[in-house]
Length: 118
Image 1: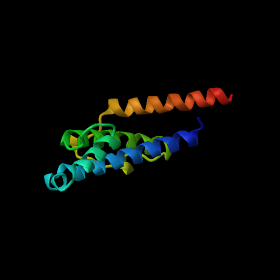
Image 2: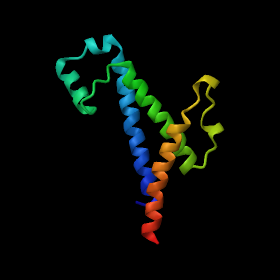
Image 3: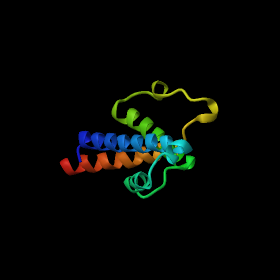
């Protein structure tokens, strides 16, 4: 996998996460769920990995994952300094453990590419 292919793959994964988050936020409201037919509910549950996105915890979990991946993506592929990506409150800093995990995972994929091409 080349640098550009990895970048595009991650970008597509981020887009997919954004759709799930958006749909989950919409479905959190009881009025939106109540107006859906059983068929529509079945479609959304089946479409999104068989997991019910009606709960706030799932949307929050996906948002947290998206945020950390976004920070690492911008920093790694666009060389954007963290200060320009976000300015969180002191109590809302990203988890460095998660950031390091994505850096390591994506870095290994890039290393494999460089080794294979040498």
